Image (cartoon, rainbow, N blue to C red; front, top):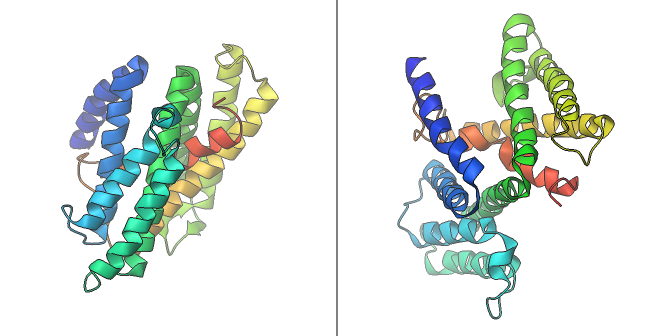
Length: 264
């Protein structure tokens, strides 16, 4: 517990100031987190981090994470979609060039991981660029849902939510965590007018959707950890696991905030 608390304090002391500063410092941190998250997937699949497929994966995550404006003045590219297509093609080509150790299933997993991680961190940076209240709305929904689910699960949990994927999660914890987040966050944001473009009813709807989506993101990551037979995605955060362990919900919630129109 002591290690877990120390890690959390140190991480917040680094993360929060960069979140407030935003712009290039935050973008650099976001790109680093994206590359580390991709490396965690590679390790789960026992793929060497200096291999061709690893290099393609890292470039892919960086390309998708970068803001859209980065590509506007680059000839023949114009958007990350073109870069992603080129990298997906190279990933498939690598199945021919390295057939003995890299197959179509590996290429599919790596390509999907690039999209999953890159898109999540892309919209995380975009949310922070829109404004601190916007990104904190999404983050607080995730954090309070997670904390509430833990407390309600410990106190009242009896019915397993997804026993084959995450045995410790319960329906009581899941519902309780969502209720806490849905009640607290929209009311506070509405009261202080931190998101003045939205009324209380809209914030309540956003909170319901994002709270559920965040828990699904958690289950998704639990699913592929169980598939690969690992407890944590990594160990870069002692007591907390890896970047994917901390950002699994965010990688789903932030793109969904864009779909809901919260990111402009």
